[in-house]
Length: 65
Image (cartoon, rainbow, N blue to C red):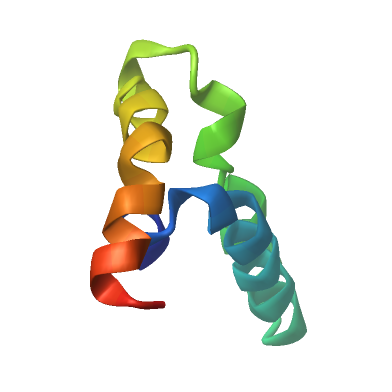
């Protein structure tokens, strides 16, 4: 996921938009299965997000978003 790699602070916002788009295109079942990784930041599955959020400001400066 692009947001996880380059803009982890926007994951929740972009996940919400993705789910809304899935619902608009009548993919409700798929939308229900999409989870926001930020909800699981404490779990082992997404534990790297804590590190990514810490380094994001440096990455954004280099990439000039």
